[in-house]
Image (cartoon, rainbow, N blue to C red; front, side):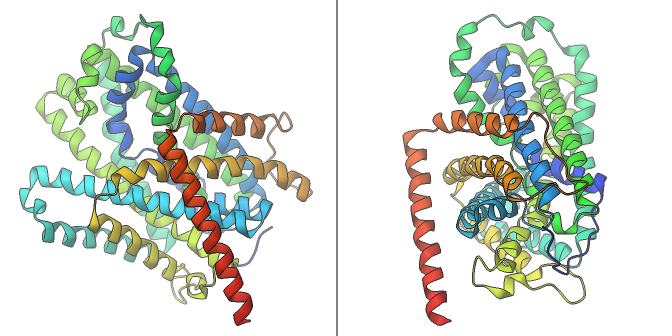
Length: 432
């Protein structure tokens, strides 16, 4: 199922693994320990394990689909190949817009963090100028080559993970194991709500696979990178929640703005607090760099598959061999949303829509198995259809925990997208 696109296969196992980890470990983990502790108390660790179990199931589905569909686009490419252009179109828009709204929120949070140290950046005009510099710089770096883009991702991944690993290592001397004892079983009543919130911190691994057309030996590299990336993230998250709960105990929910920085303040003193705030900034920047590397490949896939009638988005730079128009457009959307601001309330609906993409990704495994014969070297999930069916079922459980407002918002969004899709198709037929 590989289609020649002109892209260069420059990304190996470690680059793809770092790409997956970099996007998943974003800004969320720096605040979520306090939110999870508020809802679940010391039982929050089970929510991490449950969310990790689901994302492992989903990424297993993506590993099989990614070994069969080796072109760029990630979940969009899998869904489109399995179910056709309409379903692929919905998946792609959910991916791009959800990521764009999240990017806008993260970029604004990054500026606010910088403004704490340098108040001049609180000025509206200077804020917009810095946003332009961030998005413009990342856009330029990714246009001149995927090797440069993935190189920055590797650097960001190391820069954000090193302080977190040091915090975990040195925090154990201050951990009170009585703080980790589960005393109140009633907290499990909130398990669904806590899982829905925390799952957002596990999302993003799919975006790391959108560079499928630029991965070396994808049949082997994709499954291995997924296992390495998801396994590392789950262990990291469980340890972060454990040391946060163990050090701060019942006080953890009171540090919603910067729980990890508060843990570092206890362990290392004021210098630790400052270091973790800087790490949070690096993590936010790393997440943005990963998004601008990955999500333009979805736009590129849409255009090259002629799902949308914008041929320019399928163009490859003659020198750098990158989808430069798609990169420019995605970076432009992210900058515009970030500059306008006020979109954080939409991020929940946009992020929740990713569950539908994952649902489609899980079902695509079943469809692809029936549609195509397995090729030598393709990765295949064991136990038949158990994994994709189980993943789809747990996703439906997550969706059932959405509020009525969020469910209505998603249904309205799908209705509008459906009308737009068929209107564009009808106009295209008339023009031809």
